[in-house]
Image (cartoon, rainbow, N blue to C red):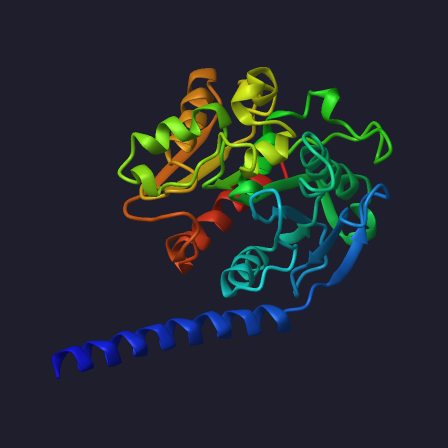
Length: 310
């Protein structure tokens, strides 16, 4: 009898979670951008963005470039989740527009293509700010997981001409005024060592193999080309004038160890760059902890402080 009660209880919980996820997906499908599928480049159909402007005010609005995750292999600028909608609405409520971007996946083009795309989106928005009622001096970047990695790379590589796409807004800066990166990798070379030493142990994701997301992103197994992996490490480009960063991760993440976030934060602090780091106890990779109303307000407040007209 007790076993039957437990089974019913578990099924009810599963049903409630499924209904919550479905409601979020429906909300996201009904949530329409102000302008959709704007091309910021011509080299690939992936080089597009959707713009979500505040419903009140005339602008020019500060704008946050949102970069979706997906292990460098999948995902879309229109995430089908309630958290995606809530994040945009939290920013819009502060008078901040959002440009959610697509970028080239690893199957289409290897590193540094995705980095170049994210930077190009910033440059395109800056060059076309007037046409979309945006503030060219108030551009921030926010990403999750692989998108968090790309957000950090945008934040620290504005002086790196090697990551410029000369065909997109030539001569225009990719400088970001603020960055938020959630559970993003930094030093690919250390990920497996960190995970093996964590409570995740044998259940953790692996990153050194030829089929790992990071190896596919680089175009070579991570450990086979340390110089390439180091070139892809955002910590290698940190300067004292890096934009203010808010870095978040969960200490139960068995996909991207939270030590990756701590590494980036330590380098930023050592260089004298402004950084705030938050490690959420018990949180894994992705998850509701990062999408609570209070945390999304924190994210929006971070951008509001640093994207305001100076």
